[in-house]
Length: 466
Ligand SMILES: [Zn+2]
Ligand SMILES: [Zn+2]
Figure (cartoon, rainbow, N blue to C red):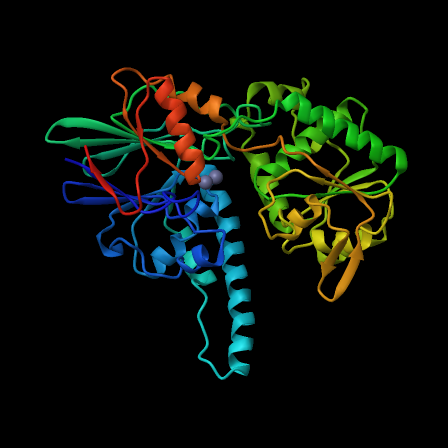
């Protein structure tokens, strides 16, 4: 019998990690960071719930930190085997983990300044850039659809999940005493209405299925409505001339927005002189997206190429990268006619805050919110109608128009999840709902029951045998 234990993304959507044991081998699926409240983030520093020494192989579904962010800690604690993932995931992982390490280093330095003044012992960051380098040296990339053995009796195959570049649904084939069983881990499933990437690949067979349920309780607003609204905001902003600021996450959403702006440019509906991508991390990620155009969906790839060799750059020729601090600061002098995309996605840090300082008080400026804003973040305050934006010691009046576009999502909706699930052959796999808030999972469980599917909701550290 194989045994699977759930160690993360059971009580919420972060900290994805699962241990699979078969024969004498132990495999870790994902090694994610807990993100969100202070309490959740504290648990990242605690010991792993499983024995690091026992792990023979690690398989990663995609590069998002809630799936990958504790890998350097695993390596720092002695894991020295291979990390299996898709090729683009390995490239994105370098950008993501290096950024995570430098943020942790900065937070630890800030905390230690306080501690020294209070006469308290200093703390260490969870991991260092050296740990990240070590983890990156263990990455072993595969193409989609390439079935390969990772340890004796266990093979994996990555299928396109269409969620971010390189994201995968992981098929795990386990052979015990000549009998093969199959575990399918959905990873994060993409939204089939999102730009650039393909729909999640269909999988038809599994004995056990772990299914994400982030949007298990709701459907997205239709994409054409969202795009119409996006178009009208851009048109309105063009008319009154001001800059448009778009806070955005570096991976996925930024590239999608660049593509959508490219569509407007091609229809001669973009009158702004330049679109500045003002984030070294988002630039690095966009270049990786650029190298893997072979995984784009055919419709968007065709729109971009129009008979020639196309790319986000040729599709949106007014796209400019601002890499250095000087280039970023030069944008402060631009009073009108620019679209600036910058991080961080929830406005908690990064260059977007400087652009807020120079633009929020202007009546002709516009801010377009294209991503989720957690409660308590500055981005959420803007969405909720804050009149003043606090920036260090400064208070900036919010005179700009703030637009919230809720329709972009990188996750499958309730109906898309069901559509994907319906492709599984009978007998139905044993189904476990993971990666969702408690309400989303129980609503999805009830919805599935009406469709003839019975699903379990596992708890932390719960094990199943199959
Ligand atoms: Zn993800
Ligand atoms: Zn996730």
